[in-house]
Length: 448
Image (tube, rainbow, N blue to C red; front, side, top):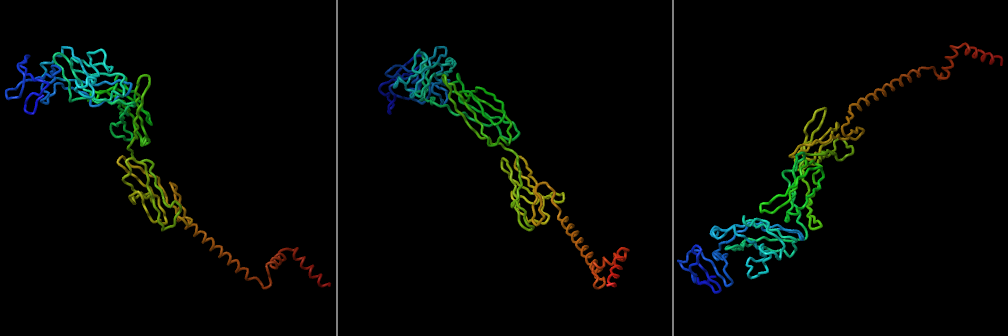
């Protein structure tokens, strides 16, 4: 409106106000030009021009920065407005107010078609209504049956007598798409084994008249609670809360929250998947031996400790059981040792920030007949084999003594007297029959 030399530009005039009266026009700025001014353009009087050239707003609106909307559904634009202090004397809330929505550019005089809704008119380009109470400065508006052509930025304007103004500094960006946004999943607290926890699923609700329905898929039993809530920017969301008690079996399992939006006679669906990260103490702790086959005394074997835990194990400790006593022998996930004659019974313990897990007990297996069993079975004591060996040696020595004694006795018989003769002689001496048989043989030989 002003040229660089302070003169009023052509096509418009400025007027100074004293109360309700317009006293003089302004052709140029000077030190005596203090006061309240309004502009008159070539098309008529517009109070919203008051002080606009000095960077001050004549209407202050509050609305979300962005709204994501589904085609075929409705959209609610939370909206409120206020009048700057310097203009409140011109605003009368008792007078019927009209609400106007302008798309793309707040200067609708250049593009009259950008006015898409006026609450004072029966027919508008956009089907909708102002649901807020304008007399209480609530301009909340609902548009129905939105299409992708609705994607644009929108400004709000009020019209009354004598006050009319648009807020050119605040707009809402409406984005229309065929598919809904995915719901948002969050966890209230740490997922820890045995501790009840809540999972939250939130879905935007651009059309509160038809909110989405939220459903859950979890690997365990749960209870749910659903509610419609208002966000800080006054938009709406549906919140669903699930409460359950996780265990280590739920670790790295997927959960799903699904939002089903009713649109006309059909539904549109969006979902969000999340993998559970459950903290738990060590489970399934296991001690293993390599090589697994029996080994010779003096050779090396490697013991390894493994376990399932979250977070992973940070500490491993090895213990030996000997003669009923337990002794800590090493630390670390692996333990290498030289095999001794008595083998040994071993187990490990694994620890993380949530607890400790103890493994099975394993026994070294030794070659050369002294095979020792693994697990919890009692090993064979090598002294048993020593006693058995000594006993067999004594039996063998005793047998030799008996044998040599018998040989010595048989060596004292007369020469030419073998065992058969000795037996017959013994029979003849003790048996009358034997004697008779001997005499008859002698007589026979004499007669011949």
